[in-house]
Image (tube, rainbow, N blue to C red):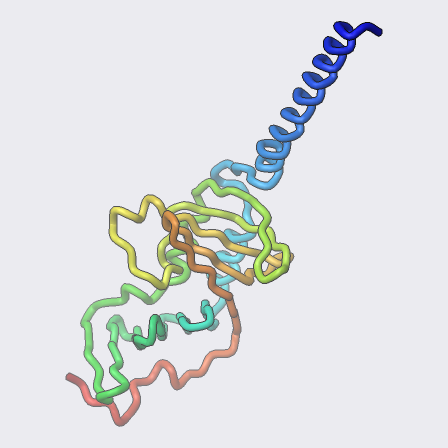
Length: 219
């Protein structure tokens, strides 16, 4: 093989190699995405929607989301609810019953009454209700070294500890991470900001939470 033919042969082999390499990279980028992120039509059954219906059937339960520093504790029993949250060291306690909301201030042993206000009575259910009619994306992700399947929805803001502006609501994406059928984590994404919270669910409910402490005074 003369020198000219060698150069042509090497050029053809190099071109063929680059073509194969480009194909592999494209498959890795787009094929893997297609495999791990699948748009699901409205009305399709999802694990998150199944979880929502399971909560709706419960007469009472405790739902907690937390990270290393922050916690939101929601306790539901019939037409009563108790909500306790700690975010960046600031604690808030609310009791919802008899059609009213009571804001409990532990430091001063006082409480404020908001008549005809049940805004947070069905806090968790209302956030999950969107899964009835919304599209979602399926994916896979590791959290603390463990593989999880997740379902991602848009427009669910109620699991976010940090407050957001109305203009940011459209950007919100929320992922629900499952181990088999058990919900273990919820991640809320707003632009570059993310919150990943551990989920704890229990049927054990302390009835004392639905009573205003006797040493609290109404303001």
